[in-house]
Image (tube, rainbow, N blue to C red; front, side, top):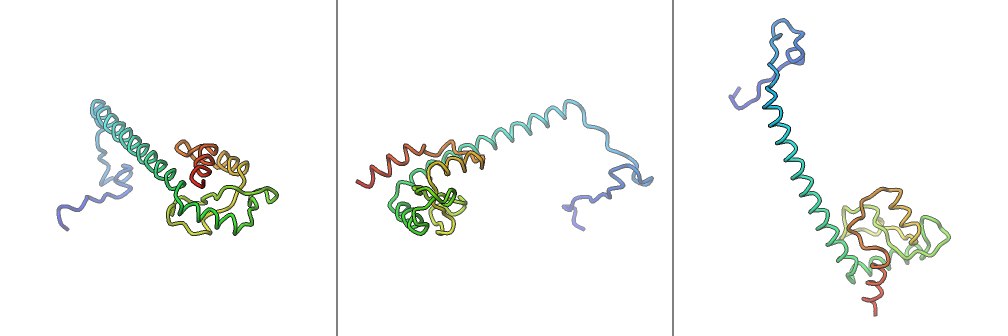
Length: 150
């Protein structure tokens, strides 16, 4: 086998219960452990910061998309398909086309969207526990949609 392959050890060798492989590696020094923990913490903090920035960028693009004529057309088709009936309560007028998944935003299929009333939409997101910090409030969204229609 080439030298680049990792050395494979049996589970027995790691546990120390095999006489042939009973040598255990010594515990790393406390100094090394601290350096390792610091490096690990730095990595995860950097990762979390990058993820937070990516989330903010995604929400910014999503909010822009919600103001486009293309989204407006899709939204109207979903509301018409569902007869302007909230698919959560079935007795209220739907005003929102809700994405069931964010995987295909911008090129979504109509079956990825459902018509909801404002109350059910808010309830859905409270129960769902999704992070919506970057999403426009419904008042801001409705104002911008109304503004762009005139």
